[in-house]
Length: 195
Image (cartoon, rainbow, N blue to C red; front, side, top):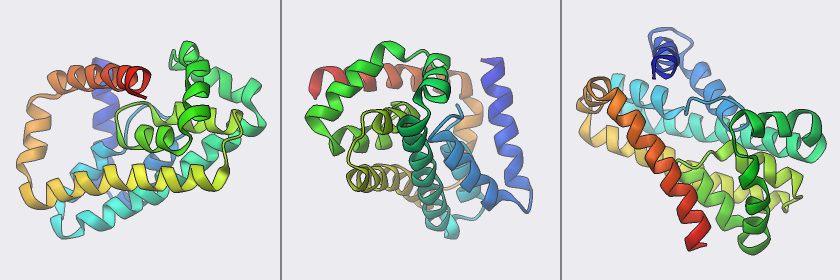
């Protein structure tokens, strides 16, 4: 928990700098292929700071995330053994790798869209999509739909409910981290049993 909290605080400090928007873009980009902290943390902070720009931040997050997803796809397509596998091993998802292949074979865009919208680690799906040679335009469109859906929903929530969201996150960070991981597991189970 301490490590996650430090990472969370480090991400939040970018909101106080003139580089907040580029940092949001880079965080969304990196999270889609290798970085552990979701961009929602910075997105929420920026949107609370200037609610009128919430949807602009969601757009920046979406573009960064989809481009990062394309990097993940390229990693899976071209350097799976040297870079892709170590990333998947780092996140402890190697046992899901073959299962994800089955999802892609059966559901193609639905698997990508679901991973882009839910707490399921999107980076796993982007790398696997390249490794399994999923149709690239389908991958990009599904990523765009899933990621835009997620980030614009968060921004809309902030736009309408404001600063109380950040206070709530700061106050209940540990509990929310546990809930996030539970949702992550539930997301994996949903993919496994519902698709």
